[in-house]
Image 1: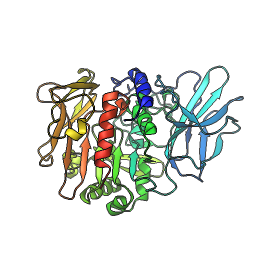
Image 2 (image 1 turned 90 degrees about the vertical axis):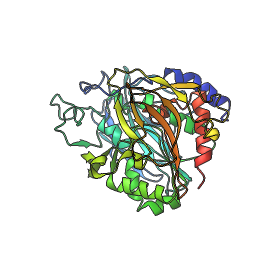
Image 3 (image 1 turned 135 degrees about the vertical axis):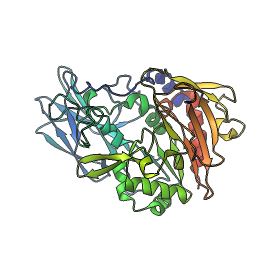
Length: 410
């Protein structure tokens, strides 16, 4: 068990907006008194110099770098990030600020910019390990999806610069500041809880951006580096290289955990600082159930409220629910938004751990599953968008601990 710390944090988890849906198309203007800034890259390692680009430096602005996570309290606003400071506050001079990445643990970090009068902004970045494989578990943050859902209107034409605002847009700029004062879309509801849970664990993990998969040659190398790869959020947009590496890793016995829904759904290509949307992976025959075990059902369209999971697989996977206080017939959590379920090509022997029956209407259920392959790979899928965000809830915290222990060994 994670002890008193996780229980204290769980009390704060009630503030998580688990019902947060897709960003509205009109959300393209910064809040008043926003200091807009972003890093030139999404991932750095210790020893690198990270360059922070500030759009409009203002006299009296300061910058300070934080690691996102405990012992600070989780943020309870969508336009705020919280964590532990790793640098002192420094005055901002000019639009391009060089920040030395010290020997900081791998994780999600952010620069916080402040100015008297209530001006504030955040700029997140990932610190990867000095060498991949320093820990045997990798946690991948969905940095491609964050930018796809970024409705920021950089060219000031009245439309957010993403295909979600205008389907004629085929690419997004990966270096844009986020809206909500620079906080990634849906961060508080989908990601913050798991990052806090991860920070409270005694075992370290390598935290990676999507970009970091370009540093891995193939599935064999990924298998040498990691026993478990966790996709902690909505991993919707992946390149061909990333898909190939992860699938080959699984085929070699590598263990996977998907803590969200609608994963590996769109094929994208990166050219410089732009991400191009190519098409659905299913159009190429790479359907979801062949990797995660599940296929995408759809999103709620704000018609179906989040509902609890019903436990159905406690007798088939008693290890998963051990000491969690739930069994077959029990309900826990509050989930939905986007959901997955088994498909015609789901792996044989796949176990349904829990379900939200008819979540989006008759015959459209959310399913949480687990399967193993002949090569020994163990694969977990949450089947709902916001499972990782609920990691601080006591029942889910225990379930995640059981999952980590069970599938982090080769």
